[in-house]
Length: 376
Image 1 (cartoon, rainbow, N blue to C red):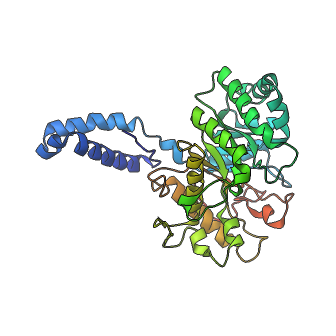
Image 2 (spheres, rainbow, N blue to C red):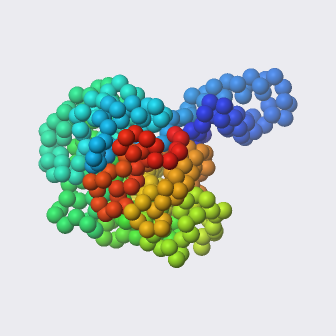
Image 3 (cartoon, rainbow, N blue to C red):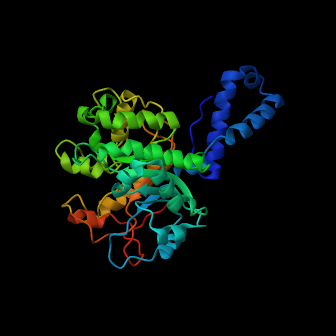
């Protein structure tokens, strides 16, 4: 029996587990339900314990992306303390900065660790190089809870002309082999982070497919991830889809406040975020990755710097509604009743980035004050 993950507080989990148990018993033991006797109660209790053991309540925890391209940012130790104070239990970092890894040690914060794009060629060149990378940046930090290794960020044949896409899959393989050899294969999944521009046709979501120009790049990666039970990390931005199509997409649909629309394939979508995810799931299915899950490795909404759509109110609305949605049990139409593991971009405003709107994705100001009310 397939059971989805239910990311609730304890009380909510108990309710959902009871519903799952009841459905299971109605299907497998209808005579017990019909008789409504003490044997049914005992059976439900035992089955309930077994099913509760399979539910992953940590799957819903929304994480943050921690970048360091800002002036006067707090120290890594202060950043970790800030995350703990705000119940942030997952973090994505883009490179193995050793001061950050030292601060994360013993914090119990789960981490996506990035292999920077500049390291891909070296890691792909030999297994020894990958082994050294893992030794220096993973094995030397046994008290850091690594969850994923993201081998490269947003590499694409559409944007990279120096052969770097050719390094991604060999680098993934080598890092995977190193993680497995270290006995960490059950703890750490190895993947890469891609952007949604790899998807060509995406409307309606059921027609989603990867662009022909990228299929030789992405399809073997997808098939490798499927063979290893690893997810694909995807950076998902309804903000960019909305500002690229303001005449066709309503702002409330992008901000999770719409009542929903029915698309040409007959499927009703409550928000743009789910439609984007399902288009990618359709593309994964066509690429031989129907079993591959998506982890949203970046999403967010800028509070300034991009015209009328970029406001503190819109950023607050998007990110708070995002947390409620991905931590709930609704999932997407193609993947219902599942939490959506998601990382919000960014922890802090970073004034060294460009263009202007890139400076304003932060949830916190450099002085550690919240830019607007938000709860994890």
